Image 1 (cartoon, helix red, strand yellow):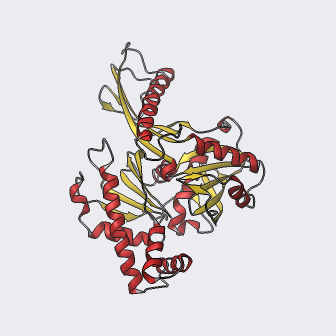
Image 2 (cartoon, one colour; image 1 turned 135 degrees about the horizontal axis):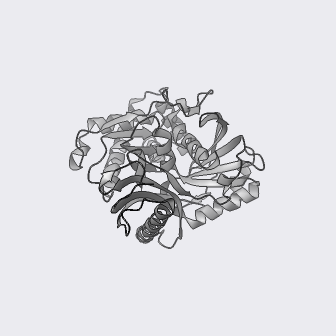
Image 3 (cartoon, rainbow, N blue to C red; image 1 turned 180 degrees about the horizontal axis):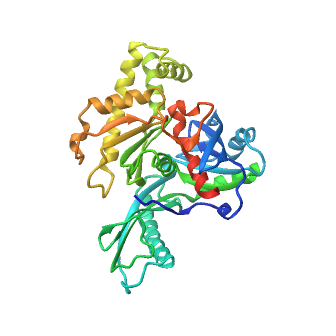
Length: 395
């Protein structure tokens, strides 16, 4: 299905400048920071030259917002070069998105749709989406006073007189229907990133929803992608609904790998650092302790209940996609797929068939070359997907 970027938070408008040969994509997580360095290749492809992972400074994040500029910049300065182009990924409570569909009766149906007419319609839909985003924001406890800024916006569906088409331009019609996905982030978050780039003397090229980046990364390899995307992170699980290759809605579950670490520490009466080592050893298959397995099963039961709650809160989804793609959980990804397959949680939701949960395999991906094997670790898929955003705004 047609999916074109119409807007992205791009403060330096670098899309109009000749791109450098390389750029950085930075995933600022609440527990980990991942820095990916890409080089442009011919045929709209990228080379992933390097990926570095460092711990996020303690207390640098408060209620999903980064607050310690000095601590973050002191870590990143060892990985950047002045003047580099940088793209940031946004996830968790810092960003959310949804689809808005508008049907327009055209005044002159015999005339062909022009770029100007489509641009005006897109602008009107974005204005409606912003009103809805503000309404959503006022309902989020503790976040209601934070101002919003649009991050990504792209067409996910278009119809001419009720007929689904890939492109409405240069077509005549009485009715024009456009479905637009739009994501929003808090203004303070983007201001923090701008200040961070200023301090590091790099170019703030763009900020993007991680779910948007994931959909762009997957779509060339999963044709007409219809799937539920699940990114199991350190403290959060991001969930996105994808239709026709375009993301249509996103939600965040306040539950991630750190919950398992805390439960291991509590039950085994060990320090958090020791519990984290045991969790990682279990994920990597070097620790097969039955007790860790039981704790993991117990914690993931709660995670599944949370996923059910998240799916219940997706508005306007009449039928859920039949495929569930899991990312980010490292070795735990296999446990996530197992519990989704074994339980009949889906019976209370509008699926046309039993959903298939699977781990994304990367052997068929052609758009990013990975000579060092970083993508063998599924925890790296989400930060690396930001490279596709670089292709859009810099190429």
